[in-house]
Length: 308
Image (cartoon, rainbow, N blue to C red):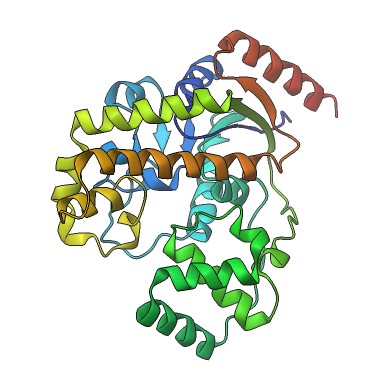
C-alpha cells in the first residue's frame, strides 16, 4: 500500500506560503488544508490576507472562511478533529495532501496531536475572569509572564483566549502551562514532510510593512468599520483589526495605526520563528528558491519514505 504523505508548508507571515502551496498542489494534483486560524472567518478578508479568488481557483482549499465570527468559538481541538477527518477523505483520492499556514499550534495539532491538560478548577476560572474584568488584560498577561516565562515567549500575548487558558491551567495546577507541552506524538496514518520558507529578518519585515500598506489601500479601514459593532468578539481581537478599532474610536491617527499594525505583525512573525525553530524536521528554503528545487527535495523525501 502506498504511504500517505502530508506536505507541510510553514514560515512567517507574508513570506509567500500560499503561492508555494498552490504550486505544490498543482504539481502533485492534491488539495490544500489551511492552518491559518485567522483565515477561518468569512467576515474577515483583507486584514487576514485570505488567498485571492484566483489563488483559491488555482487549487482546492479547505478551512478558508468556513466559519462565522458569530458562531461558537472554534477551538484548536475542534480544528484537529475536523482536519483529521478531512484528511481521511482526501487520502481516498490521493496519497498526498498539503497543510499550509503560520499558526504553529494548529500545525502541531494536525501533525502531532494536542497535549493533554489538567481540568481547571471552577474557582480558578472565576478568579482569572475577575482579574481580567477588574484589572484588565495587561494584568493577566503580566501574571502569565511571571508564572510561565517559557510559554510567554512563544504564545501570542495578544490572544486573549490563549493567555486566559494558559493562566487558568498554570494557577489551577500550580505548574507552568509549558510543562504540559510534552510533544507526545499521536499515531497518524500519514507521514509529514515539512517545508519552511524563510528570509533575512530585514526582508521579512519589509514584506510585512508592504503587505500592511497594501491592506490599507485595498480597504482594510472600511472592512473593520463594517465589523465595529462586533469588536467584542474574540475572533476580532487580532492584529490589523484591534488597531483599526482604535483608529475608528479616534484614539489613533491613521499613520500611527499603520505603524502599530506593522509593529505588531513583526512581533507575531518573530514568535512564529521561535515556534517553528523548535521543529528540527523542517527543511528550510529561502523564499526565492525555485519551486523545482523544493519539489526535488520532496521527491527525494518521498522516495526515502517508500523504502522504510
